[in-house]
Amino acid sequence: MQLTANIQNYHFDHILLNAAGVMCQTTTELDTVLASDYTGAVVTKSATPALRAGNPEPRYYEIPNHLGTINSMGLPNAGFDYYMSYVSEKQTTKPIFFSVAGLSKQDNLDMLHQLQDSKFNGLVELNLSCPNVPGKPQTAYDFETTEQILSEVFTFFTKPLGVKLPPYFDIAHFDMIANILNKFPLAFVNTINSIGNGLVIDEDTDTVVIKPKSGFGGVGGPLVKATALANVRALRQRLNSSIKIIGTGGVTTGRDVYEHILCGADLVEVGSQLAIEGIGVFERLEKELADILTEKGYTILDDARGQLKTIS
Ligand code: SIN
Image (tube, rainbow, N blue to C red; front, side, top):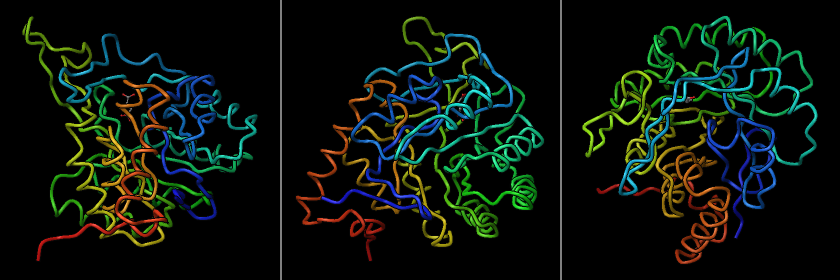
């Protein structure tokens, strides 16, 4: 079974990787993802220019009955230079995604300038969708600002760049964001980040389950799968074919990976389930996916990509 993908001239021997935020904050965690025989790449924790401790704890919670997770991590990360030195020194045959999430436009421009001027030869993800920094709205919900940032970025940035998007919930918004993204030579979009600002309540104590933002946080896992699939599908239908899609959200089984592929995903990221299950999740998901493809008569994943059927 051929389970591979390409983004521009980057080849991925496997289609699964971590979602930024999970198992990617330290060099040890990044090495763990790279060392798996079942990952095609690794993505770093979204970096800010300087180290950030993130929000106060508790800031991550697994919702009972396998419904998913809620978090308000607040971009804890070791700082841009830490990840730059990791990617500069790392010898690996797998592509690396360097994710950045500045707290301002200038932060993002500064980090992208440094990446442009560096020897880094992987892919760069501009995270415009973190819902967890108090007082900072998710940039990609502001269409005008998103277009302005990308316009400035592409005056100097020539390396492969993608954007990490929040979920959209309206057909008009799918149209609007796709119209903007299609104006730029993006290598990929990553959809979706967590569904921002959900609220989970502990049944025993009637208390919110995470401390930051009075309990509001990004929801991930099975609860968000339908929204993730809709965003992958809607963007695949609207974006230029040169813009590849990384599907993220709600992946706990091989069937979920397969559904992301049916909707048009090229690569698939695993967030909540990686946090819950650990590195072994990639082997299980790839085997489950391969079994489904074999059962359906596919020998090459490409043949299934985008093959979602509708009811006529
Ligand atoms: C966080 O660190 O709060 C999560 C990052 C993100 O959602 O982009």
